[in-house]
Image 1: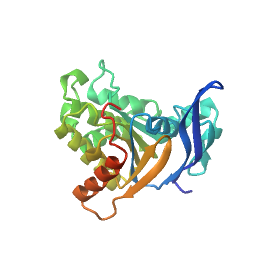
Image 2 (image 1 turned 45 degrees about the horizontal axis):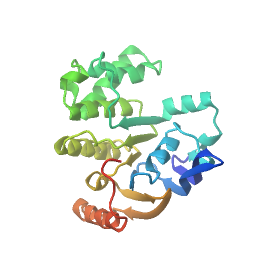
Image 3 (image 1 turned 30 degrees about the horizontal axis):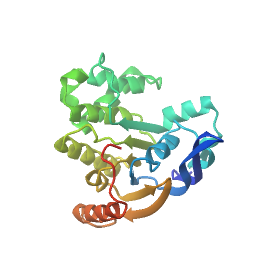
Image 4 (image 1 turned 60 degrees about the vertical axis):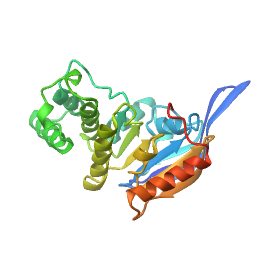
Length: 254
């Protein structure tokens, strides 16, 4: 079975008959297994709405989204919940860690829902913490560590079940530049070493330059696409900035 993700002619409307807003307008694209794809656009371009539909948090008005052979637009609420738990990992700007649990316990929580054996849970958790460079803070609580370390913990929690797709919504938004760079390098490592498929929404050109491909949204539609290929990251960054300048830039508060 192909693990490609296909978004087919998807539309999303909000409001009622007298006041309808079209947030996503007949969007079609494919994400190949092991790709690192960025979605960019100004405030109101539809990028977060699109991410939420891929995340099964929001439903399409029309069109279809396929994960391999599974059409998630046809699943029941119960089916969606199970699909989300087994196939998706999430990294948000706000970390979403539980302050009453240690770093290790926050990661273990994601595994505990899978009904695995205790020893297997412990081993898997330790491996992911080593990979993320946070094994030395396993006993600390979220309030005792830096923003960058919190985000790497959130990353570890997202990856611990080896999801089919890692969804990241402005993951560097709350980080200083050094922590942001570390996180983006972590994403690159997950993508290249573990073959993780990553879809990242960002307004930041520097963050986007780590992706292998970028889709640019405007008024709910894809209006441009950039592929990095063999280009150096600084060359790709310049290309991204040029596309953004054509759209009048982006809103940094998006």
